[in-house]
Image (tube, rainbow, N blue to C red; front, side, top):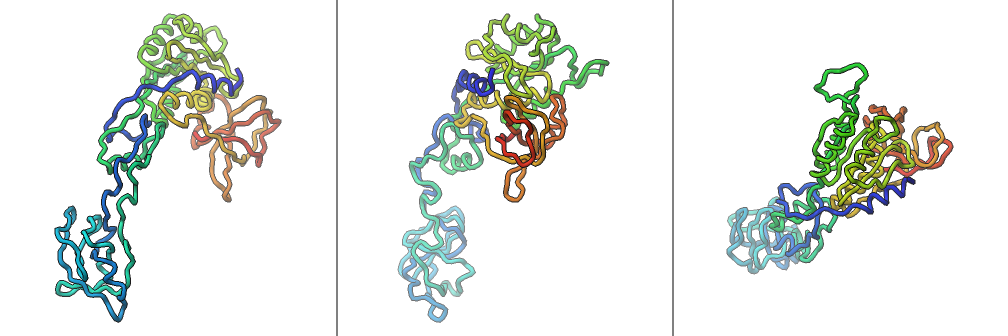
Length: 399
């Protein structure tokens, strides 16, 4: 299947998961399911941004170095308290940072900018109305949409919710993801190495990718090259999860049993191989809004297909408003000499040099070269070029 078609078909098939209310201390990284709208001004009253004295600015209109305004200090307001007196003509109240502005006051002078003696202060400058004040609603006005459905909840959203006294928000529940490794040659890390076998690197590569993308998952282990066993483990994972992701068993060899096992379970395979490199070998299947995304066993093939094709659909299920991969133009710092037919993704490191976005390609782009992921933060999307030369411009996505 053509690459863009595969991306669209998968994203179109999935739906957002259900909503739930979550406590504010567990909201970071979750996806909003309802707009967050301020029901009041923030702050809800005029405040002092500094330690000083609050007064009426009109009492300083004639103030200067030679003719200071002399005000009576009628009250001192401790932290967390409010003034009990109203500021009258030629009067001031001592306030601390964050304090509510007393009635009758509309300006604040710093402690260090006055002379204080025997309950009086001297102000040597003319002040404007609301000078050194944080006004009600200066941060947020009542009715303001602070964050929208589909936004990722960050520290700002959490902080604003807390400032409004909101203890929980409506978010999309977490997508239930299952992960399966396949292949009789695959060993777990606590297994003793046997000639002809390999350790299960895919499990830990995807563990890191899932964590980076705030995806919770359950690991269902390694299934050997036996169709009955493959059917059983996939059935168990499918029953418990929204999406099952597997690596291995999707090529055309005698022991590539994932596709036939999924058909036995009753899933409909709607993508079988994609015109892209690496990552062509894959199959996607679905039944009753349960999805299996079966990827290649080659580490870089599975990683590429996951980022380029699968992750947008998973983000859509998670509730992201903007779930598609965002591509932007960069220039290559070095060259990839092989001819590129259709679409090829190239791994590299994105940086800014002389104000320009450039990608330094990893030297070895092989399907099994795990070390090429080290210090790799971007993938170039190259299409139908004889050679991807240094200095050429290509679409790029962040990892």
